[in-house]
Length: 275
Image 1: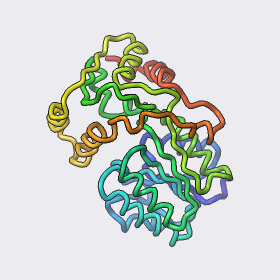
Image 2: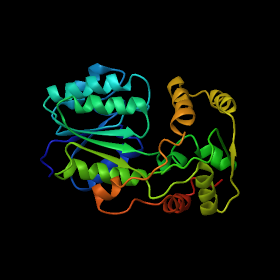
Image 3: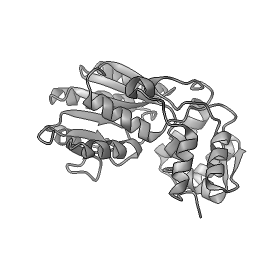
């Protein structure tokens, strides 16, 4: 397949995009990484960069930055998917989020674009504990979040990448929406306890107020859109609305999803959580 048109992977250096690129490259399927550091560069905030990135590609994996939950994301997805179809790129796969109003609006924009679409609607990534803002609290031995005992079906980014690879390279997935979750529900306290067990360290989970969390986030000097996103996730999305399991991984891949404990054990071996 080395003579085929490349697949454009937006967010190609992110959690799922990087893994998808590795999988496709290993199969000698050409990829084009869509990022502000790619060639040609791609920037969601610079629409003039979209057309050059779309030139001559066969399909697009759409991962929106900073997150598809951010207000206005749906309108951007609408403009991008219509431009892709105008450029003759019909095969579009969208990384979406469960229980997020803006994400579901973006899904409707994709469906209306005229593309041959597939949606991967995902639960919280397990890798948010090892490739995001939670790494430092875990290293420090205390994770403080404004969330109670609500269960979240954490999904592994490797499973998402496997699903994305499958829907982009196999027939039968056009017009399908797959909700991707892990195999069981865990609270954030449960997840932290599993990580602590895997690394053999004492790591505490502490429930704090939303005001305390907002102050802690503000002190980290994060970009305003990330501050908004964290507040949205912990005040709105983690209210129990996603406290259910789905069979999306099984439907796409014909196997069970990876359990959080396997993720914790494998990640702990890489010493990301060890001082």
